[in-house]
Length: 341
Ligand SMILES: [Ca+2]
View 1: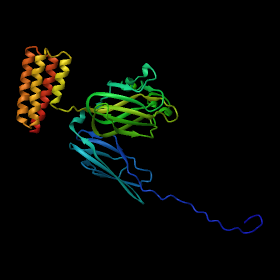
View 2 (view 1 turned 45 degrees about the vertical axis):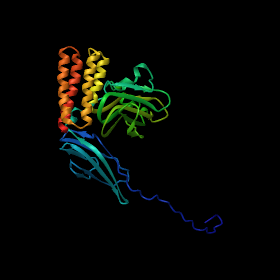
View 3 (view 1 turned 135 degrees about the vertical axis):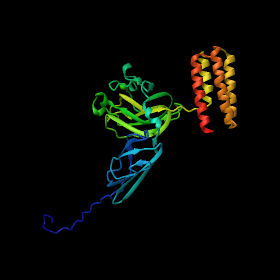
View 4 (view 1 turned 120 degrees about the vertical axis):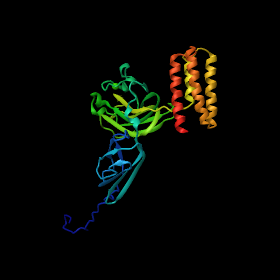
């Protein structure tokens, strides 16, 4: 009614409720690799509207779970997928991560392989805040970079490593305010330091430490890209420690011998050019038989190469160091090709 006491038209008030959404399945694990008998914990990160979860763990015990963050034991070596189904009254969402879990005896040697490796960066705030302080194993020292984001930190592991997990220690881990923790960053990996593949992307971090597991992947170089350095407008990156968890995973190939001969020659570990030629000639015939798939001949010539190395060492035509490195590589190749026969 209005002030003239006339009856006004009734007003219809309607609310446009958004349709209740279907869930979106997502999950993480504390590890992606373990030795046989090892335990892995999974974390449900599905969208908030999820009412029920159903996990499928091929090769694991339990093989099915309805818990939010189940712990699963894997007994046998192998590579396994994990599936999560997130459900509510509107429907379900299925996410399978293929080859997510690797169970291997090699995993007992897993450690932070970034420790004291060669690190470079887009910049530094001070000499005592250089790139190397992100990989020095000390959570009280940091790499800092000023200017406009993105900032980057690159680590050369010095060889091929199988990588399973990254741990990034942000500002608060070193005693600075939480507001300075990195909000958005990416981690990229590479074999050559030039072609990069994204392994991790985080856009909404608030915590002091971020852990991200990945499917076991080989790489030599790892790059941390800091896209949004803090929770607010401050553009300085503050990384107290960047851990890369993995283990050495060098490819065993005949060309490793050629590379070693070249390296040893450059370092003066081989007496003269004649000896270099003798070694190189031998490797060339190995490659020839390998191309023809004559594995018996490859193994025979590898054994012959070892005899040659012994003779060269006795005659002091190669150093003890060159002998050790070449003969270790030769033994690895013999073991590999005998397995493949
Ligand atoms: Ca540090």
